[in-house]
Each structure stands twice: as C-alpha cells, then as structure tokens.
Image (cartoon, rainbow, N blue to C red; front, side):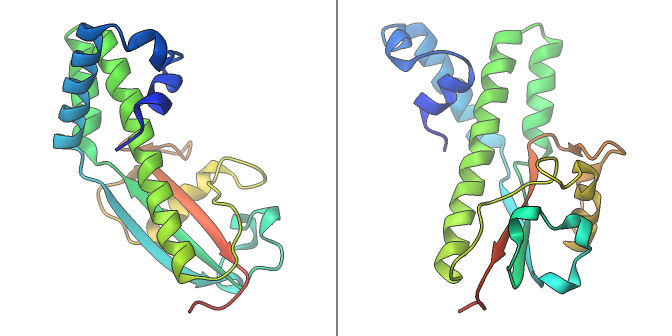
Length: 177
C-alpha cells in the first residue's frame, strides 16, 4: 500500500495541511480501501542473458551487465474500470484521488519486487522502464510478448492497458545466486 504522504504529494497536497480535514481523510481512506479491494497486483518476471536481447532494448546505463531481469507489473483492469466509472458519474475528485493512489500502489509493488530481486542477485543497475533514456516506449510490446503475458494490450504508441501497468528492467553484473 502506498504511503499517504507520497500519495498526497502526487496530488500536489501536503499531509500536514490535510490532516485536520477529517471528512477529506475519511473519503481518502474509503477510496484507498476500494482500491485495495479491487486491485489485482501481479508481477511477471524473466531473467535473460544480455546477448539474448535486442540491442535497442538495452539502456545505455546497462554497460557491463551479464543478465537482465525484465518484469511487468499491473494492478489489473478493475482499478481502471472504477476510475472510469467515477469519471462517468462526474466524481472527478474521487477519480483523481483513486488514480493517484493506484499510481503509487503500482510503484510500491515495483519497489517491493525490486527489493526481492536485489536479495537474490548481486550488484545491479537502477530499475529502468522503456520510454526513458534511449529505449523507446514501444519496446513494451516486445517485453509483454517475451513474458507471454495475457490480458495486457499494448497500443501502437507503446502505452499499455490496463493503464496501471509498467514494464521494468534491472541489469545484473554478476551471475544469480
């Protein structure tokens, strides 16, 4: 579950300014609980030797790595559907709060999985996602296919559906333990 201070920062709010707003905090908690109830967090993972991957997929910062962990994490389609439903009902504030919560929940999932990988492997790079640096976001399609993930649609732009889905890579300098 994401930290409330971090989540509020995503919404451009400060916890210390909101802590006295009891009704607002109650509503935030209700939305958090809804998000927890309907989210279906899952991570798909594969480790590849660096030479098995197309060079255009490898970030410049991965120089010298021997293996690459590729993973896809998602909260599932239900959270997207709830956010869209809230928007259709004209509950823009609730939709915005839930969208921010879901973004932070997905990042918390990525951070937790990142920590597990680092316990298993020796020295590694920073976590990296296509769309940053020299790796085009359209490589998401390749990663989804490589991981053989069902239920994730990759648009021609590289954007994935459900929206609360990310692909990540970590390069490893040593062999896995």
